Length: 148
Image (cartoon, rainbow, N blue to C red; front, side, top):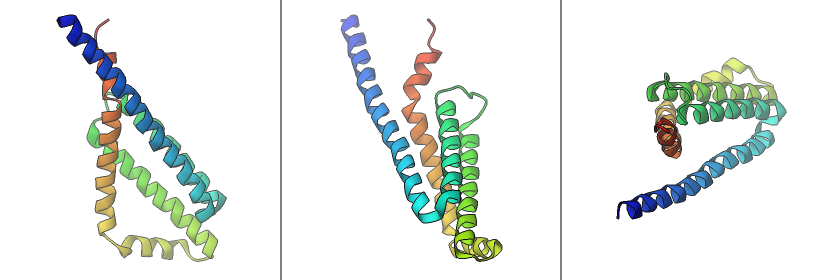
C-alpha cells in the first residue's frame, strides 16, 4: 500500500512538473513577444534596453526560485523586481523622449506625477511575480534539498 501511495505522489509530481514547465514557457514566450512589441513602440534602443532588463530579471528569478540564491529573501526578490521595473520605466522614458524629441526630465515628471496608484500596482505585480516563480520552482527546491 505504501508503494502505491509513493507511486501516486511520483506521478502527481511528474504531471505538475510538465504543467509548471508549460506555464514557465508561456511566461518566457510572452516576455519575448512583448520585446517585439517594444521594438515597434520604442525603437531599437528601447527594445534592446527592455530586452536586457527582461533577460536579467528572468535569469535572477530563475536562479532565486530554484534555490541557488538562498541568502536572498522573498522581500529582497520583490525589491529587486521593483528596481527592474523602475529601470524599465526609465528606458521607456528615454525612448519616448528620443522619439518625440522632447526633454527627458519633462517626460519623467509626467510619468511620476501621472498616477501615484501606478507605483502601488508595481508593488503588487512584483509580489505576484515572485510568488508565481516561487511556486513554479517549488518542486525543484524540494528535490534538491532532499538527501540522496
